[in-house]
Length: 182
Image (cartoon, rainbow, N blue to C red; front, side, top):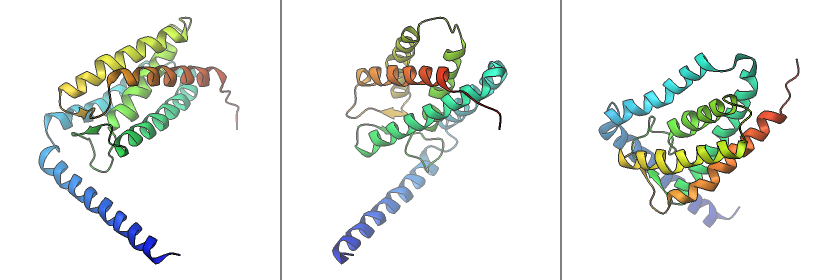
């Protein structure tokens, strides 16, 4: 292996470690136990509790499968946006994740799971557009307003087709997945 490559790679990893340590220090002094942190914790827990209480019980596995898909795709896209400097977050629930956990692991998947089971006869495209309008033009600006999200090189309109696609794929998965007994 090329020694120059190894040296540069180790230097890059050292920078990542230092950046992570800096983020943890900032989180401990400026985020942990603030109202934004408590709000993020609430947004991480409360929607799941509501989903558990009001979900369609016979569809639990199917909906959780879709929710897991939404978590994977949204957290991956979120991480890509952060790594490419398109946006950043300032009030994370945990300091170890650059992505916004309440958004990727709760709000998006739980909202989609609720929408899938509510009024199943309504066109998926109408639901997708409604979901996307709310997520892109109401939720994202709200998180900017409270100081959690900074869309540095991103406009809310860019999110619009992405949220539509995520919803439509989720709808397709929910209708095509068959779970058999083990």
